[in-house]
Image 1 (tube, helix red, strand yellow):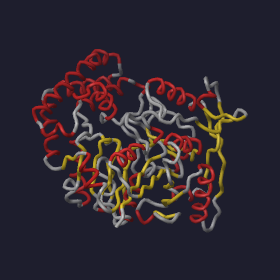
Image 2 (spheres, helix red, strand yellow):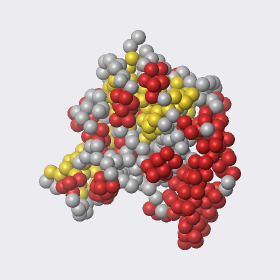
Image 3 (cartoon, one colour):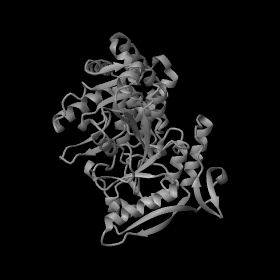
Length: 475
């Protein structure tokens, strides 16, 4: 038996089909482990042909196929939520022993209740200017870790109850000091928001919250294996067979490549998985897959050039509804410029092949509308540094791969503002009647390959593993 690693990366704003692709790969290749990167804000919906379904958050989307889950050093961990998810898997889907085959890297960051509260309060106080937070504290935890350094809580700290309590109390004091002013400012916001803010701050100040966290965090580490780099290299990546790296969200929401500030604070590019393979001297085969829907979607605020309200009505989503923190689930036409930008942001050769999902939702419409360019409807400062423009028409979005820091984020914010002033130029592809399914697959594959220059390896024409179709050999 040989070793192979698949890297699954979303090339949109999330919800591209990473979970269903990971499930399919795990079944097809009998993957022994799914390695998660990103954070627990991921909601990956998997539907099996036997009727089981689950929205995976921290467990890998290969769990139904018996694949173990490894939460990598590039994954943020919510211990209490893991316990809840395991209970749900056990009671609703009959999955037994999921924690027994879960490993967590000792350096993975832990989200505390205080960081979750702080993130929600911050978002509530933004009023109409919300950024699209999921409300579980991912961004707050990442930013705190860059300031707290050793004061941040990592999985390895959960074994030491005294140290854990000390760190929790320090974070509680820090967040209360930081957010105490919001208790006074709450009087300036609408009554319903004021009530929610004050309720959140009361939990932040409550000493019982520390003891609750100590207890729940201890419950988790008593049931999973905490591992280091050597274990990952020898026991997971050194093991014969297949592993699947399952990322969270999409490249267009990446901390530095997304359109600030409507982004996540984690990295969603394939380099997170690639760095683990490199550090572990992995010498097996690697295939990096970029996932896209046949139409684009977005949850939360921020630019979305091809958004079309009529599509949201025509293509209601079974799982993605209005979110209490992110707002409405938005739907738009397939955007070649955004897809090309995501590929460029990942870097040359970072994506080997594409997987296109949700084709079944489009072919029944009789036509497929694709955005090939943008019109600019208002003045865009520094447009030539942000967009590729030919005779007044936007033909591309300029990416700055590997750029980070405050100056780059300012640039990405300007880019997002520029996209808000763009409107899509659509090409309508008519799907021949009769053999519509096969005709649309051919049309979609040829159009995307021609425009993006990356082969399409597989397509999905439905929610289950039976609905995935190989396009190229070797997968």
